[in-house]
Every structure is written in structure tokens, then in C-alpha cells.
Amino acid sequence: MDALAAAGHGPGDADFDAVAAQKLDNTSLYRMLCGNVMHSATAVEVLHNLTPVWVPEAVNDALASIEVPTGDARSLTGIGASGLFVFSKSPVRARESLPGGQTMPEVDVDGVLWWTKTAGHGSASSALAEGVPRRLMLAPLTRSRDLQWLRGDGWRTSTLTEVTCFDVTTVRGVDVQEALWPCVELLARIGTALQHKSLRRVGESIATLDAA
Image (cartoon, rainbow, N blue to C red; front, top):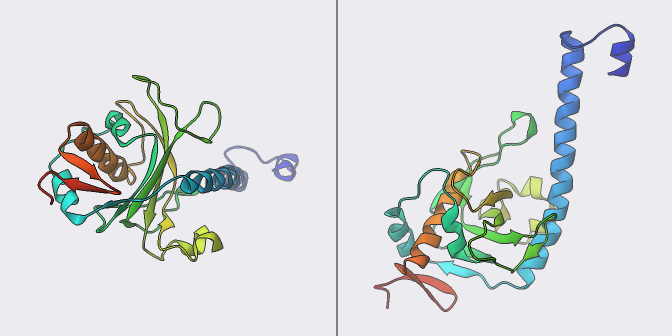
């Protein structure tokens, strides 16, 4: 950009604007990759202390009848401070949008890892303040192999691969990418059902009330 500016090019010139746009994309990608490194370290820390919770297909049918207003993430408080749901059958699909407008493949969501973020950094916290909105990090997971080339060797031996990771605050009017909202809505439905006791925890799984 300095060379173009020295040659008298500036905003509004096609070559200058193209270089400026590429520099912005590169900066956004760098920040995303740095965030992914920090996120991965925290995810490993969280997983060491978690036991997966199995969600059978029958629960998907029960969840489908629960309404969650678009943008309302308050019911996420019902799923707890951290956890890992694994679904016997994928209830929703999701995809990630990258800087520069690139879109990743849409894949089934076969599990979701989440934890509560502490103020000021991304590490996990188990502390819950009553009535205070929480910031959750959500990481939808998929059985699809379509994303392994991007996620690297760390996921190669895993049955599940991370789709993406993103912050959600447990408030009404939360701002989430449209392609990722179904994942938030799914967890909000589970949180609502657990709070209203229309679903129950049985050991390390979730069950409907009429399940044996």
C-alpha cells in the first residue's frame, strides 16, 4: 500500500482498494487464527473435566415442539456452566462464514461443547451468578469429515470435528450469524425443557419423561 500511495494511488483507485481489502481480510484471518489457538487450549482444559451427555433421537422430537423466539438466548442458562452434548441423530445443521465472505460447507451438528467465559479472557469458569447474563463459548461438532482438512491433525483421530466456535450472551436480542442460530436455538430448547422438567437427566443422558 505504501508503494501505491507513493505512486499517487489512493482510496477510489481499483488497485489501491483491492490491496486495502486484501490487507483487511488478512488481518481478520490472523485474529481469527490467534483466537482459534487460544480457544483450542481452553477446549482441551474443559474436556478433561467433562463426561459427554448422550441425547437420544426421541429427545429431538420432544425438542421440536418447544418455541424459542429468534435472538432470545436466555434459556441457555438451563444447560449449565459447561458441558458436552452428543446427539444420536443430528437435529440441526450449521456452517461457518470466514473473513472475506468465504463460506464453509454446511454440515450436521452431532454434538455441542460449551463453557462459560470469565470476564476479560477466554478461559473456562464454573462460577454462576444468579440473574447475571453469562457469556458462553459454543463449539458445535460434526461427524462429517468435510472440515478435517481445515481443523488439522488434532482432530484426525476424533469421531467429532469442530464446525466453528462463537460467543453467545444469555440475553434477549443476541447477535448470532443466521447459519449458526439453529445451534443456539437447539441448546435454548434443551435449557427450557430441563428448567421446565419436560426433559430429565438420567445418568449421563437426557430422556423424555415417558422413557423407561
